[in-house]
Image: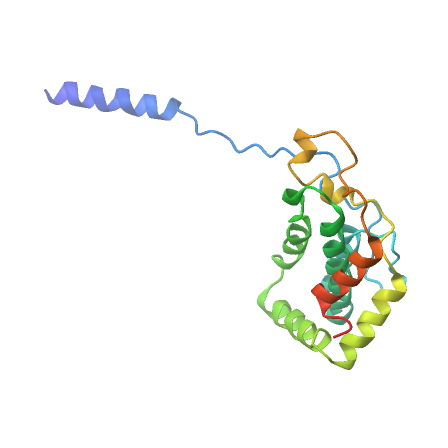
Length: 191
């Protein structure tokens, strides 16, 4: 009986070892979260409206590496406004999380000390009604309404796989209205 039990356990053990857990397969559409024109750690005045949020957040990451948290916070702010603007013009709602994914890719790499410094700079820069925020809003408005095609976001959504019709943008889009709304809703500019 003992021999049968041992052989039975060996058989089960061999069978379990031959079972392979399914592998996770990551499928991405070409252009997903792409950064065609990455920034370095630059002043806000060096950012153009041809830079998409992925480009700008690359620069933010470089600023963090250089421990230039003030520049990093400003780049985070404009990337956020641009990404927010893109959510108004990109039709596929499943694509709208692209900005959050890009931000997380940068921020999750921070150690605790650098997180504290970033938060401190965010709080100082983004304090509602502050002179710093008013200056930031003016500087972002000088850069202007995005002129890039938001491929990084369009290709992040499900429609990149399921619906190849159209360009992925909202028809009859009011860019000036969306720009004002992005500035106000993301940074509270003009409040």
